[in-house]
Amino acid sequence: MLEIGPIILREWERKDLEKVHEWENDFDLMLYSRGRPHNLRNYENLEDYYNEERKKENRLHYIVELKESNEAIGTAVIRLSNWASVKSGEIGTYLDKKYWGKGIGKIITIALLEISFYMLNLDRCEAWSLEYNIRAHRVLEDCGFKRVGRERKSAYVFGRKWDWICFDMLKEEYMEKREEIIRKILGEYAEEYLKRVNAERLTP
Image (cartoon, rainbow, N blue to C red):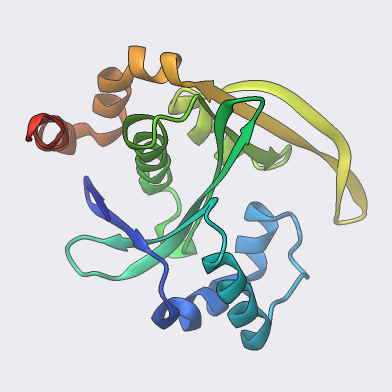
């Protein structure tokens, strides 16, 4: 579990399936997070997916909760890989629509970077977003990601083909500006978070 600012990231559990099922069948959520708004998922299919993902050691699935109420408001994932001895993590997240535009997506992204670089010692992180998802692009770039490539015309939505845009960040890039980025994104929560996690790191 990671507590950061107003949110908590905890492990995705079976009790969360009903809420995740609701999100996975939300047209707008899937339009912006997957680029496949009509790829509906029934409960049995979701349960099978949950069971299979739990078996994979290279998958870290999280439920995002509000700290004050313990309300589940979204999901996050890190997909781990180790190609040619370079440890990488592909991150992804989506958020309940009623919390869009409140800066929470940036905090979730910082949480995933903290886990990836500060706790798991990964070498790099990447994230993919469809070219029309300008809001997600801003979130990633505000958190320090760089656009590094695109997969051309690889998604078909609303009668046309769209590119997937690839963003990435290296560990040294994040660690060099870690506290600056955290202060920018967490605002009033930053000092409490940094004091707590830095102290935990030094505790024997």
